[in-house]
Every structure is written in structure tokens, then in C-alpha cells.
Length: 197
Image 1 (cartoon, rainbow, N blue to C red):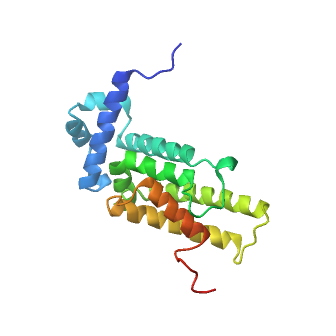
Image 2: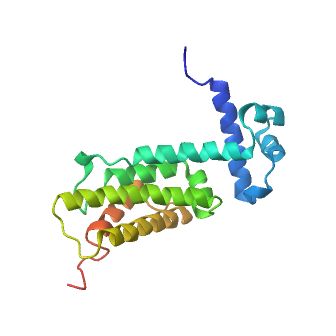
């Protein structure tokens, strides 16, 4: 028996997701009704309830799918991990590329912060990435001047801040450029020559 989802179901769900996202751009999520979602999607409430119990289930499915895709895209592969400041890390390229593909979604969720749970989940994904990278460095006998857990917290917050800045400013740089800058910031800092040496 096939487990493929009917293309009509996929299209219908996409229409409801797009409708909810559009409404979230305009107003607080708590003030959005199923009736409004149905009207915006040009479908009806009966069709909505064939697919979702309520608007919370629709939102939860949207967020879960986005987070799972993001987790998969930033999986650390040992072969990819190199300490080269001038080469953009492939993981960062995948991360920024994914956000370009779903620009509207990430702008609503991260810049407008419509769902704090989503922002915190993205932070946790970044933190896991940073922890894995730190572990590789520790295994390679690279010494830290600050406690590793402090370094992880600092880098995680910095990455998330840069990502939100990039989205807020309408993605002014390419994924490759952004990946290169994050790699540089993570390895040698923002200076041409370190003024503190």
C-alpha cells in the first residue's frame, strides 16, 4: 500500500498554510480565526476541518516540518568540518539557502517573532551545531581560552543574531557570503589583524 500523500491534499494544506502565514503577517495569531484562514485560502471551513482539528494543529504542523527540515540541513558531517576561515562552511550555506527558499516564513517567525517557541527551537538547533563543532575541536586537542560552555552560548547567540539581522535587512548577501563571514567570525574574528595581539 502506498504511503504517498495525494497531491490534492498537499495543495490544500499548502493553501491553508499560506493563508495562515499571510494572516500572521497582519495580526496577532490569537486573533486569527479558522473562518479567516478558510476565507483567505479560498476554501471553506468544512475542508479545513477535514485536515486539521483547529488552527493550532495547522501551525504546529507548519513549525514541525520547518524545524525538521532545518535540523536535517545542518547535520554535521565529519568530512565537512575544517578550520579554514576563508572557505564558507557547507552547513552555513545550507542554512541560509533554506531560509531564502522560505523567506516569508522565516521573516514572520524569526523577525516578527510571532511564535517565541519557534525562535527558541531554532536557537537550540544552532546550539547543537555549535556543540558538535566544539566537540570536534576538543577531540583535535584545540585549547580554549574560555570555558567551552561559555563559548558555545556566545557563538550560538551571535549566529542567531546575525541570521535575524540578515532576514530583517531583506537578505542583502548571498548564502555563500554569509557562510564565509560566519566562518571567519567563528575562527579569526572580525578583524584583518587582531588589535589585541
